[in-house]
Image (cartoon, rainbow over all chains, first blue to last red; front, side, top):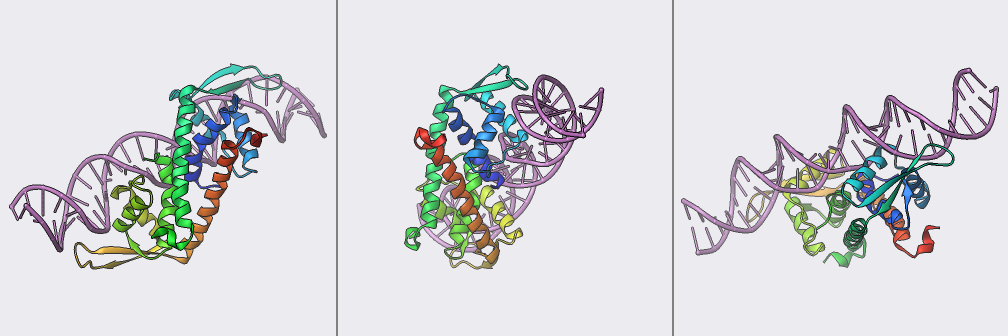
Length: 112
Length: 112
DNA sequence: CAATCTATATTGCAGTACGATATAGCAAGT
DNA sequence: ACTTGCTATATCGTACTGCAATATAGATTG
């Protein structure tokens, strides 16, 4: 279980990272996140789908409907060139904040 | 410059971490963050003060007014026992998300 | 006495996580 | 036939919060 804010900060980077490995549909992405986090990242539909729509509206991902062999049809997403670029920005920002926290959580002398 | 969401996720941990080193007043905390981040963490008053009030309302910090020798009086904050406990939770949550991102950003085989 | 720095506070807007709810295809049990 | 449960996507409403804008005020410099 992670805080709402931490979820908010990591949602986009995680989804874009998953899609940078290959296309996937929404429900699949939720399960991948659940597996990757060993059950800690429990996104609900009300969290993921609006995000996917926002990412598509921003041009970071593109979508295509495909029928399923067993069950309802799926909307498959791919990361765009722009999305890949934003992911790189997200990565460096995350690393930036992480290094600040590491300074604060490191030995006392680190703070000056 | 960090995204709004990343700011949101790191604000509380950073403030609590700074206070865990010793008491400080609001304006001082803003400057400490600016220094620590080498100019990247630019919190404004509209961001910090409401946060401090929320943290105090939650019992994570306590405050005391003290006069300044040069300028307006200052409200000094200290971290409470509860605040220190929440900080530990924040730390482990951050590390948890960080490790998920490291899996995704590591070598291809890491995703399975 | 105007401008600037220090120091805190509050209002209003905009963005968003998420519970709740709706829809629909498929499979298995009773 | 009917109910339950899993798959799969969508949307509404609520609550929270970062932050620009604005206000107040003490101290210092030109």
